Length: 337
Image (cartoon, rainbow, N blue to C red; front, side, top):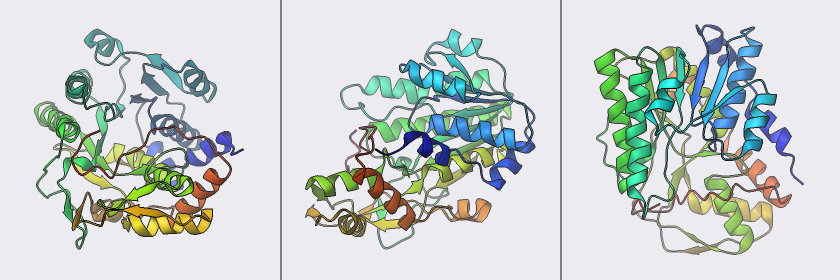
């Protein structure tokens, strides 16, 4: 079986650049929404980066922690945990002061039929957090879904392009950004807004979705014919390196890798898994694509290549490695999740 402990070590291995960025921080790092897909490895990456920098500042993980096993595992790794419902104003007010905050709170899946909760999580919680931590610097995890679909012939949406979210999840994600931006300007709170699409690792993400469908003989919808992907550690590393660069108004960054053909990705999995992929539909002229040139200029290109990502995900699938069972639904062109 695939070794999850080893995978967690790989996903939380700090780069020299992360260590350098964390060495200059002036206090603890408070991670809000730390129990999601990217949160545990972000916390571990921060803890290991601070250790490598010789810093004793705390990493504090805040979440509801419906899985107590995750809470205990983070504690064993030297991360302080706090159980809190961030929709509760009093719970937010009771959180410890911290000069560095990473906001990972968000709801995407389950939006259809429960739109009001998605808006509450993605828009009300940011207001509570931004007011409570107005004196901190804040890195906010956002999404490329705030953009409209763009031409597959171009580089994708740039940070300065007009937003145009499709569907209520994407609209609420833009509300999250606007609320943080309002408090950044009103309170002079330095912030970074990271528009990520799509972070992947072997247990979830676009590549896991495609690999599972290829192996299982399921049809792959080609209407959303191109997609951006980035290795999870590379995305989390950008978040930590963005902390000292946060500004008011916020620094906005697309965090992703180059656009890839969905058909090509599926065919590569087919070669590795020994199964010919099955397709349905045809590639549309537009896809949800982001241009990460600004990120590359600031931090350099992602470390892990697309070939390496495909290899690791394919090997994980071949070993029957665990899936988080959280499909991305990246193929949705109507913004329903």
